Amino acid sequence: MEGKKEEARYTSVSLPTPLFEKIKERIEGTGFTSVSSYVVYVLREVLSKEAEEKSEPFTREDEERVKDRLRALGYLD
Amino acid sequence: MPPPHGGKLVDRTLTGADLDDAVKRSKSLERLTVSTEMAQEVENIATGVYSPLTGFMGPAELDSVVETMRLPDDTPWTLPVLLDLEESARIEPGREIALVETAAGADGRPFALMEVEELFTFDREHAASLVFGTTEEAHPGVAAMMAMKPVMAGGPIRLLERRPSEFSAYNLTPLETRVLFREKGWRRVVGFQTRNVPHLGHEYVQKTALTFADGVFINPVIGKKKKGDFTDEVILETCRALAEHYYLKERAVIAILSYQMRYAGPREAIFHAIVRKNFGCTHFIVGRDHAGVGSYYGPFEAQQIFDRFPDLGITPVFFNTFAWCTKCGGVVNEKTCPHEGPERMDFSGTRIRELLLAGQVPPPELMRPEVAQVILASSNPFVE
Ligand SMILES: [Zn+2]
Image 1: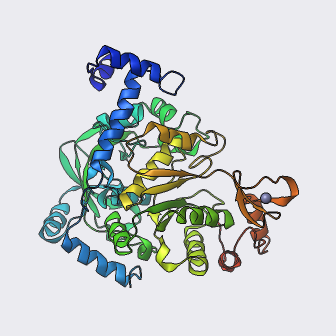
Image 2 (image 1 turned 30 degrees about the vertical axis):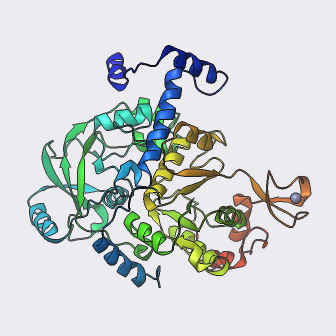
Image 3 (image 1 turned 90 degrees about the vertical axis):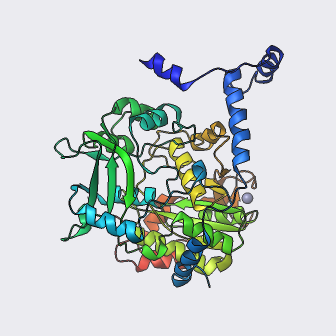
């Protein structure tokens, strides 16, 4: 059962062999224990950067309502 | 400002016609009575403090979080968020139920609804060993997990009304803090979590962070505490006193987090950072043995774990040890002061506590007199 779970949790992608070898060299003596863990780390970093700089997650209406409460509580003048 | 965790600020509070419908519907639903601490969790989910969660975890989410420290969609998430119930509870999957708080008083009005998707159990020992790094019940987080009722219910919740709280004037939602930070023109906001009264070391950490940030978000944890801890009221009042006398009004915001500590050390440090990201912080202060208890975690484990989350979306700021140095004439840390021995006065919580218990004002090198006065003026500053 554990094995099956692991299977669903991971999948494989193909890397050019020279790149794979380069990464293998690159991670020697670092905290990364495998090429996979390094690639996962880098991709997560790249993808999360792309997620930044989006617009604020609230509407004008939300904002006015919120500002009223913040003023009432003394957080805003 | 960082986007909310998982990309979307969750809002599960019902308003208008939806609310009217839900309130009507709630009258005929099966009820589940929950503790004040569980009601706090529901509110945290509903107001987006726990974005992207929209309800209590099901077995797949729990398994993913326990094993990988991530939600099934790969979003970092390190702690279980569970609703437990008795086997005798007449709750079935696929049904909507109404949640009532134990302390709700005589009328027992439901404050939230939940669509129960799954009922399940889990291997608590295994989960505890991964989440807390131990299965010893002397660990308060493990003990709490072992003491949970036998069955877990997973599924989304909807909030009907926010529960009254004596601290409601300091209870801001992530939406509110986000609007507030933007109105203040803060771009870099550093979050500071506390469950203690502030001494000069805390002030030093916050102000050091303020030298590169635009504002500090002081976010004391309010909720069930251990015997001997300072009371919620004293913690909040001392934070206020410190800010009032020693901070620029436009550079500090104090609001509470209603939350029960898990003492999960490194995993909880990540969780605390996620929560502050949802409030709109770009940075989060992580001290020595953050969220630790006893000697279960190494002093820097809660800092090192951040290396594993390049996609967290909030930057940790690490502080280690600091002290008052008479030779340097100020608060110092291990990188700024070469002195040792009698010149250094550590910010020992135990020592400060002893002085306060004896009715004495700690020396000004340890605690601001205005802060000490708040504690000494309280008839009982400690949890009994
Ligand atoms: Zn010194």
